[in-house]
Length: 413
Image (cartoon, rainbow, N blue to C red; front, side, top):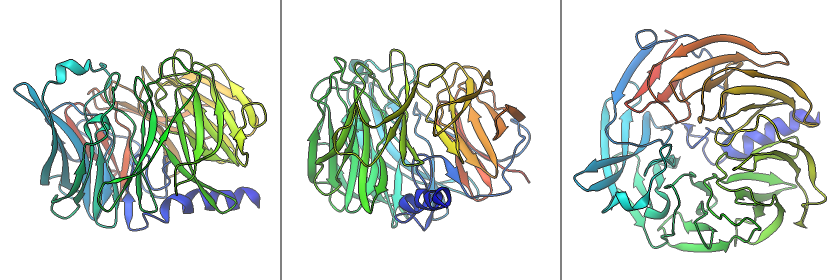
């Protein structure tokens, strides 16, 4: 009974804010890589199952979001010695561009020393109530109308010394747009009023890690009727109150830095990766207060843990795809290993569960379709043959995959 209640809570927490949207934010309506869509494709290629493709200029790795019959993306387009940071909308049915809006311009991008796996537009947009909110890390954040791209507000009042570029996507909770600002120094979590973009609160992050920069996306959960923002940074994960950013609890993990995966919430536990240089998977029991480092760690794993791809919980099982393409299944409650086997090549995209299957995509554009279970059962492998670091999204009964060159809508029909 408890398992079924928790499954309902998992979906209700995220979807209550986005009931009108299909795939409103990074990792979808649950914010944890789950979709209730059925009839999704399991086999495709560059010539099979492509409903449409839309060529994309620039260099950006944000994942697509879907709402109101449109697909929304952020982009970074280089022109001369500048980079235009934009948000664009495509018609979900045809793939034709509806509009594109410029939010910010980067004057000298060469000074930013971008990591080869990052971009100036890696955070995904987030949709709510006819508005699209975008975040470009230290360059600024903004809000546009979903119908026509008209700017509602933009704010670049909170720059910070980024390392390797930008990364984590924003979170909407109540009247706030929340994002991690884990910079080279003075890392923090920032909340803007979503109506006008003005600062609501800023929580300075203190941790034992000497390298302060990270790129994770916060997660909204609910514990005993209380909303909590789960935010992971270098050396620490915290639960914050949305009202004012005050801390409920924290757990430290020493020198872990450059934390990328979004945390996952299931079975009354938070699952996360501790980042570089060698990541560990932590299962943390919720419900604590203060420093829970010594009291609320349920289990820890140190092998086959991802630096970049976010994890996935399906039923009682935790699935991970590490950066070298090793796919593993563990008991989510105990950490017991069922299998660890090679599935793909180097991987960065987060896992997706839809229509009874797990979708995993590597950096070469190969997507494996895997049946959940305690043995590895690969249904198909599908190659687009283009570099991709973005995570898949769902639109109706189809998949959206962003590569280095284009956005593809993949269908079973």
